[in-house]
Image (spheres, protein in one colour):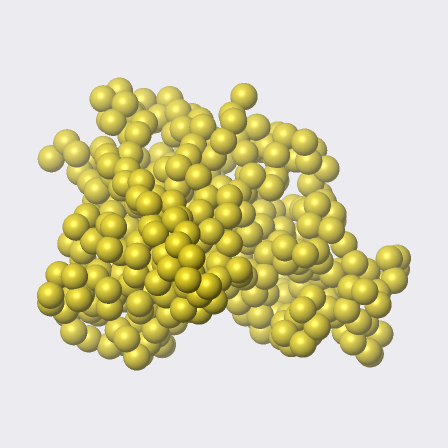
Length: 423
Ligand code: GLU
């Protein structure tokens, strides 16, 4: 039985490798990261005390280009998780065919407990430990869970002070005024939206008749909810780490966001008036739901947009969505994948569905190295082309091999990596 995210990732690799007869030496090579850095980051806290945080950077594979992937700040970060995420980045970049390899970083910390000054010292402290191993032609970090453009700006600045020259492409997801790209802040969601649109086309769904539940209201989930709502899709449920709300008639995520800012919890407009979870009735038209309940709702499309391992063999049989679009990384375990495949539920896998983020990161890097700044319209047009091409290619591979879209994406990605290794 798969024990953790890295075991899950290796089970997915194994499955695709068997189906496509992947060269055994390439398969063996891909079973571990090329380099892993584990660093201790001592920080002076605001009260004058020193606290030491543990950080990781996993450089999984650079066959297709420099290692690429975000840095996560979360209390549950572990080496196995970072390794898995860096492997998925390798597959993700190859799936959408951008010239980047796979990497990932993380710090074990609850960033909500840190002051802004502590957060800045931690971010700069991490770069002081890993700067020799990163760079715009070596390894290019970016945001991930609980890391922001501002953090990327501090990291760029720290890196450049250490190397003594300008290198804006060392990190992506920067603030626009600091070399960031237009569209990057919502690009993970936008890429997911292009996948929803492509899927809707295949399944003859129209926005008005498509109900959607979104788990997670961070950068990816909140933008996804707002963009889909704008396109006319019916968002019936959303949740954050504290829980969720359901409105059978659909809701406006902008309102939910506004209520969250004011009341600290997500809310909905319920029969004309604003309800926060504490005021909602537990039955009927709109109600409070748990994160677990959200996953089991009868909807057309379920979007896990939070963390790994939320759809497991324990709840897979209860999933009633017709399709799943994975905006989070690794939300579905391999055992759950099997159950959902048997049930005929289409999963647009993370390595495709959330690849909009890293794709616009690649555009940001490209603009930085060419000293250009592209208009949002151009960025989105290029993103759409890449996402639609990747979606269609994965869809065709799925038909060719009679496998899930996840295995099809892996086969597609591994073919590209294997091809490059051979030449
Ligand atoms: N953290 C994002 C991901 O998991 C983006 C990575 C990047 O932009 O490099 O895909």
